[in-house]
Image (cartoon, rainbow, N blue to C red; front, top):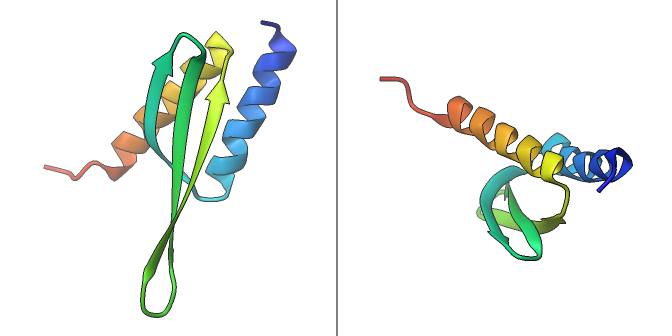
Length: 80
């Protein structure tokens, strides 16, 4: 995998993050890493959840999404 491939995958990840998606689940297999994103929207009377899945191959992109998940968990963690 090249650096250019990492940049493409990082941009795909950032695309979802910029639009307000949160990382819901990360799972791996021999084909790579799958990242599930979720966006919650509130309409006047109900909440709507949009889900997207991104397939990541590059090791650096997998590390990048892991660091984003850690940041997300720190931001959503309740203070003691």
